[in-house]
Image (tube, rainbow, N blue to C red; front, top):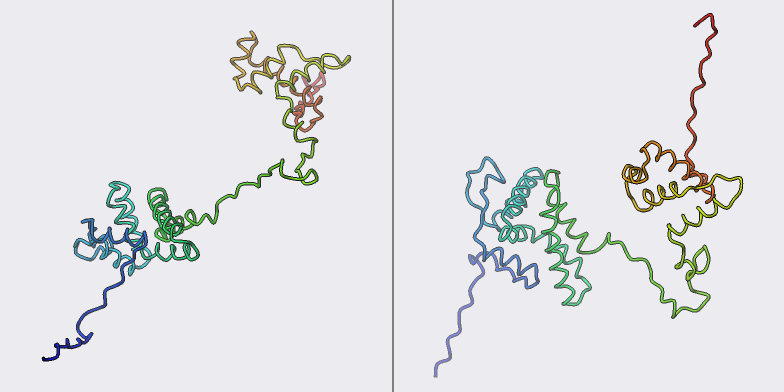
Length: 285
């Protein structure tokens, strides 16, 4: 029985470049969709005005942009970003496909020590943040593409995220480690007077001290309704049958009284210095 025919090994010569391995990550699948699913193109003269306007699918546009000098790259990305903002949809996918090489490099940094689940989520987050930057950032300044990818990485990595202040479980801490207010018992601080209570107390205090300027009900109402309740001075003055200049002067006087009662001399407005009246001798009049 003849031996089975053994296939002749083929030479690698003439077979072209080897096929790249499929990137099965989230960003890799997005780039595959951009290459195979959408049928969009950008005229080549967007990259080079001297070129004939031949249509560039995503991969060809990416190759031309990656090789272009900075100002031309900025112009191409500006065109792509403006198109994505105007039409969204598959143009967002087109932009992600063009940005794929840089985003994939950034994703490698984010996911170097992550389990598969969090790593996949990091890819999603990076892609989403890139689209947010594409639709949000100023497109007129130079270095557009690095700014887009840097903004995406910044938000996806959380490297500038404000960390929340530490929270204490007061019931679980020993008494000597419970944070306390500089002004006394923290439970007492929670029951401090409201601003209206403080105003009522100061009015009563001013009106019971002999020899001190008192605060009338009208003046207290001016303070309460304008400073505490946020009403306009004109409206309150009209309700109290006062002219606005008169109401302003009364409010200023009582505000000075309250500042003194609180010991807050820094809140007292300085009295304007009036120029002395000039005296002309009778013979010069």
